[in-house]
Image (cartoon, rainbow, N blue to C red; front, side, top):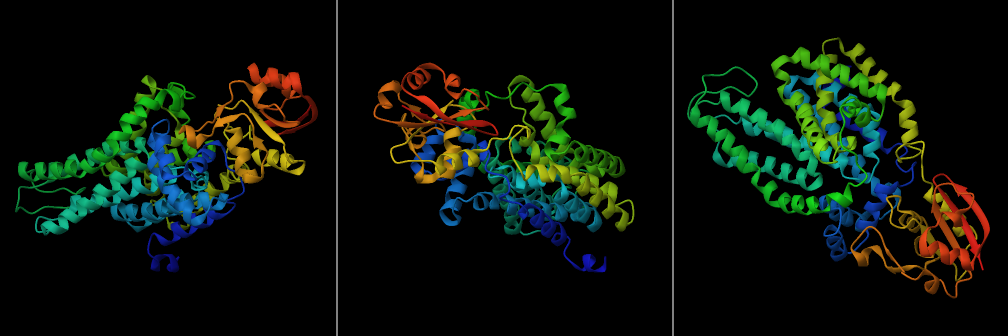
Length: 500
């Protein structure tokens, strides 16, 4: 325990999170959302910008970041997921720093360690998607807000400006990474207004936000609120065009999302924690911590509740409610939980953290096998690719059914087969050329298949008769010219070899 007291408060959570997220980083193969990241990140910048004009505009800045990363680190599973692991490590470290600043070293340490052992931290720290980076930026923006509000009256203007500039940069980056994470600004607004109520007139003495101070001063209050609003201008300028573009793409982007229901709120903790048991434990500890802190729970409490309620309210009207979109609130829940644990001596508090980790072990193991949701329905792209590669001959063609689905069958096999795979014979315009996540297919499949003797057919689901599962003209052409020579089923899909 004495060693932990000598270390900076952020070091143990950072080291634990890094160890947890790097363990089995490449265990699960890329799932459908990560395949979209790979497809986008490996395009040219021009093709990537064209993609954001068609779909996924909200994720465009993240794709540009990953494009630069892949150019340096490559596109292996480990390389694609490493930024998320590093981001979650930073989020745990900053959670500890924020907790120590608000409530003391013990709260910060326990909050950071609790975040490290959550299955959700591993899940999103091992995913080539923007949620871990958004979590890091959400905590960073909150950490930078406090010194901007705490600046005493005698602070030099340049230093005061630098503090607000750092906050402004973090908020802009947060919005560019994950639009929905900007709902955190509602919580920041509450904190700013609370600080403004305590702000004295210019030149008067003041206390730090969160403590009782002198009578409110109108000049100081307006200055605080005005500085915060000005700090949001860069985010509004940069994010505004993304919001407009994403609004036009919503029907296609989120056609798989249902309207939010009251019962969805009850399952949120388990969803973001990736474990019902651990999520319930976290929610219970957070409630105890909020009760203990009382009014001092304003920042973390509002940072959890306001984004959740805003997204839920919007999700009732517009299909938008997806639990993983709210992963960025988890560190603030851990702060409240850390405050509850800090009421007991450190050894038993650490034992509760260890218990949370132990309860999540089955989920930790499961998410390292597959990232698909539900976990009972994995899609084995790698296994299908091995079947094709093991018996492929020159001149072979490959056909997918369905092509335009969120399973991304073609991307999954293309990732594992690379340039060595059979010719995708029905493609007339690939994803990059179309500026889309799906390729365009030949309108007359029979003509495009002319001269092909062997076709590898990949269909979604486990099918005893894969040819019967192919609809429309494509199915008619295949059934008229080929017979099934071999069928192999893998989780989530079926591979068939067709011969004339």
